[in-house]
Image (cartoon, rainbow over all chains, first blue to last red; front, side, top):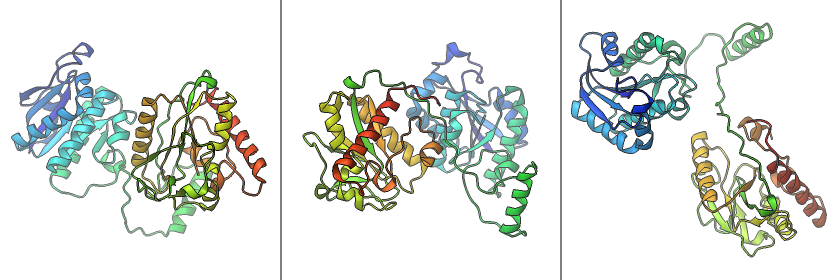
Length: 346
Length: 54
């Protein structure tokens, strides 16, 4: 098996934080943990090329670095791309995840990395990339590499991959059908019994995890602030000019309200299939309260009502997609000088 | 509310109902607008105070 290995400056033996700006350094053969990885992968396995990059450089050049990794893997005709393990190193983890994803998407070969649960790379890439749970302790290097090697061999040989817990990788949020002897009712009662008697049990459905969002600082003086209205209730001008889907929306729209003191039902419609939209269609101020905010603006309670409101449909939307929409809307409003947002959610 | 809490929103104000967050069609128009003012007043209060949970 031919392997290309990605490492940061530290594990690549090029220095610590002072070397974080190191530009991509490519060398033949294995470096540092790559040597150990070669050993645990067993006979016939060879790390043919190592890519060593400083963490800051990687964080600032993810796209060109991804292209470089794809090119190197292709040139070497590698069968496996390995990044890390990164333990709790955040920039390293983010780069490792991005490169694994890029190589997998471009070339379709197995990719693998390792990180601690708290590494931001996990939340970002766990769905697409096998990330072995490395823990935070670098001393566990050999064990982590062994787990990575075992999983990588299975991937390379197209063997069935077991449950995350058995194989040691981060859950990817995939549900697989399987036959089990006890009925759902029996399993459920067993779980409730275990739970109420303090015994360990494992749920068959793990809800998505939400990364805590740090609270933005309060608005110091609202009477000087520019405030925008955002809604996930799907209010759009008649005709739905941006074709915002009534469920699993992939886009949002910004609609001008300058010069409007009140929103009228005849000018708008609602693209949302998750609630009874009649009341909002009768009077859109029930969702996007322009009438009241305009009065408060005139009374000087808020500095300025932003010239447009932003709308999308928040229904049956995968988390990753919702996050992207949120990020895009926030970037737009920030660039336009908005200091506070009231998001009305149905 | 439960969804907003679940996803970790920092500043949450209870509205007038899912299908009319900033209103109540059973109220006369002027009273309904008063309700909007009241909900927005609470939103403004939340915006001007430090959120207690990060």
